[in-house]
Length: 315
Image (cartoon, rainbow, N blue to C red; front, side):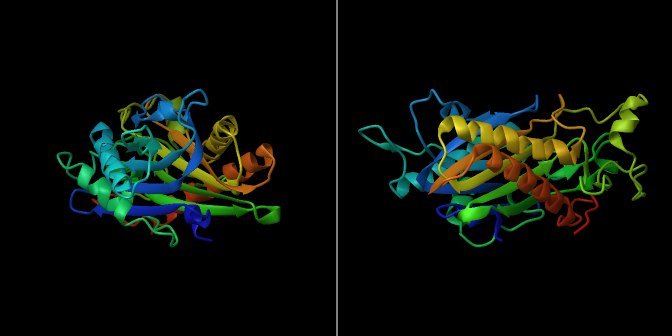
């Protein structure tokens, strides 16, 4: 399975700056996709989210941009719009077609160079690089500077990145995911209950501190609003805007099952859902599959991330 690109009509492209340790990821659906969103964190940074409201006039979107760089990185979405405009893709307004490209960012300014962030040019380059090949995972694109387990700051954190996964259902129905994991909390495998990556007891240790337990004991530090898990799920089943909203909500449960703590005041956790296809499937079943796809993508994001910027990884 290839991850998000298993869904016909979806392409994914990454651009990474390994000197500044940041990057962005463009998810293209040029023929239009019905979309929804679920924002659970309290430190989110987003753009064009209103277009996903079921009451909004736009029925479909044409891409999603995920980026590092905190709020500065949102400008990379203009690069994706520029790319799509050149291809004649967008919402017809009469004089021009306007590409609808919601965006969300994560905070990676603490690992590389905080003065270099994803730009319009990087966003356009990510869109240009978009392909139907298997999604590249690990410390790439929006996950280039991603880290997890930051209770004690970067000195005891671990490297993370992007993960992807696909769940197959009967009758050819697919639910695929792409997740950029930049969480405040620790990543646990729900199958075993064991921590896979997270805050370490000391800078030189690989022994986990257990963020939730440390917080209950009164541990302080690392509470900057500089964390976010960004997820995108997509299906080839036909859904309405209301149903894609529900799919995003149920997919968010995959984040909650694999990250502890989650949806904090320090995280900007945001999940997008896309419907592009004509298969028939029950929305509740799709939601269950979406949660599973997100869990597996979160685990892959940390397991495939290599050491970078002095932050140890598992890859």
